[in-house]
Length: 624
Image (cartoon, rainbow, N blue to C red; front, side, top):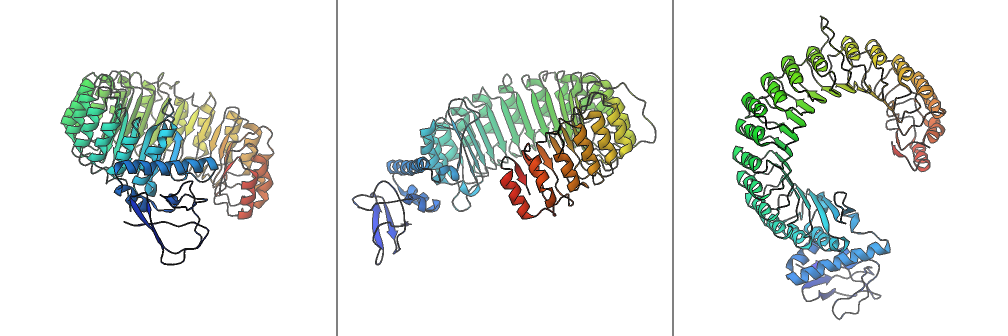
């Protein structure tokens, strides 16, 4: 296929165009054109053309380069790509636009021996760029990590590009392929053949890769420690069995939405790698109770376990997993959208995982107060508990957890738990939880002032409080909680608490001003400049303040700017319509310490003022 290139010279082309050859392989047609400038430090064959300014190869789109490259013999391909890489290298030295404009090329943070990290995304992901990377990286110590996300819709990444990487980058340690439908077993076979130091393989939405490719990796890459498979419709049990058989160093496995993966593959892999496998993540798979029994028995080294969307696992599976007593080293467990997790199975997990410190339950609709309290009694090492959309849990269950984990639990998070509502009868006050440092209750719309007062009494040592989205609470609930926290609050998030007034901020500044570092009042529309006065006078360590969509005016901004003790680093006035161009001097003064300023949707601040702020506060990231 002819490739169009520009001709450079002192004389104009006069008629019909000029036909000449690149080496002896590729014909190039030049139509008549005026003084098109191209540069390189060499000529073609015996031609006397001198090139200037810009390399001719860069003038061609990737599609043309690919066609040229594809038609060359193997030896000529290597010379071709080396030439292009050399041109890019020369341009780097001259300070011109380099290959890094198109392809991210940064030293890898994961490697200690000079390997590079490359990432291709979207339209930049082409075979030509991969071929250039394969040659160019060799001069920088070798490619250690390659990530391809998406593909050029005209000329996307194929087996050809991956083969170029395999042959040119034998030191590759990490390969990540996302949404590359044209890459199949052939490309992965080349990686397996040439890149035997591979330690991490991630395949996501790769419908053309089958068990054959994964088996080749397993047989040739014994150093593989991490395998991630997601939405790979043709990978199943055979591939996982090979991984278990040959990859004795496998430490982390994550499999999601692979319909051919069943109990046979999971159980074979887990039993074969039981001594080293520490991280397991299984989501949206058609596995049954049998796989969970295998995890409970063979997961002797597992420290982190995530189970999500396992619709074919019943209460029995989770119960056996807990009672098998094999998960003694388990530290972190996340269970999401699994109907088999009930009060009975949850208690069994608490008893069987004696070192469990972090527990997260998401959308577990059959867990109630009874199961939660029984779990808390059994899990003697629990430090962090997160409940999301567990709607059968009420204040009674939360109080029971706090009472039974009074000396261990450090963090409690409740998100969208609709069962937490104001109760007609008061709950007997349990033993306070002196260990709890962080309390996050987000978007639990039923929680009111009485529950908040109770939590304040139960958790006197709180340092971090997040009550975002609790639109039903008022000053009457917050003020007693602030008064109960004797340790000194450090981070407070009250965003979306629409009914709070300046009285809350005044109390917060007075009681906790000497420890407060972060305060978010986003959407608290009744907060005014009076709150900024209290903050300016009392909060000397505050570094992050968000008063977006509050009733703040230019006067409040000026008050902050004149505070002698304040040393803000991040400040947000987003949506404050009363902050105008008059605040320009105050914002410039505050900007001496700021690294981030958000003035989005401040309609009274003109674009010219924003431009001057950007010019003045060159150290600060400004959102406008």
